[in-house]
Image (tube, rainbow, N blue to C red; front, side, top):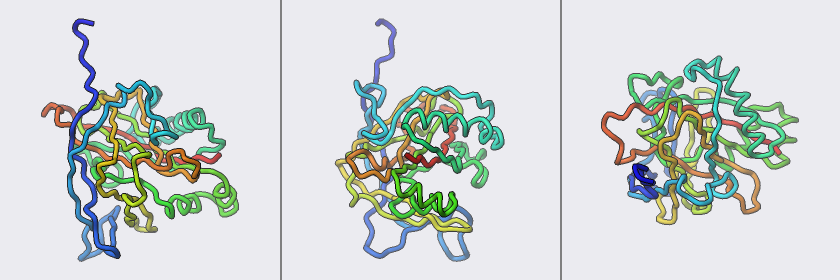
Length: 277
């Protein structure tokens, strides 16, 4: 149709990967001011130019059990995502309903959320953070079940861990369409366990784990351009099932080279949840 903007099927962009490290060298990052003499994080990083396919242009959209992530249209009644009380009162129940409908989970436990803003003057400690700009995944084989044990009473946790469970993040723009620092998502089927490196995530009261990722030309990357506030991406960060479905999908924020210099800051919210089947 005359005047229709052509669909860009693929873009090239730089993503930040972990540089391969000697065995035994510790990897960690602090979620708070580190102890005197300690860096905020360890490790060395390198950028790699990759192709990212426009997920909207695919005949078959990526799925949670196939590639490990999925785009959905999901309007919200939340008026102010910076109001933590409103998010917990209004948004958490919305996301619980969405996840049950999308996955068939019998029980959903939403346990926290993060608001992000690329404008440095809007970032306030752990309340409003900048984007996560390293290729990573939020949970590991050890930290996912441990987090369930942290969240649930012992008997309930043991019962839930005896069946299939999954950790899924739900990512939404607070303002749209997103033009600056969108989200890149890696096809879980293109990952090799050897690409994943455990890194400690140190909190004041506990130590968790995430996966950082070393580069491989096998990785297949996707993005969803110009996401609106009525859209969400579901990201599977862990699945206990070992039946061939996607178990994790690593992801990162990235800079789209076509972004106008005057594009507004990216504002987003991600909700973290456990699903029990």
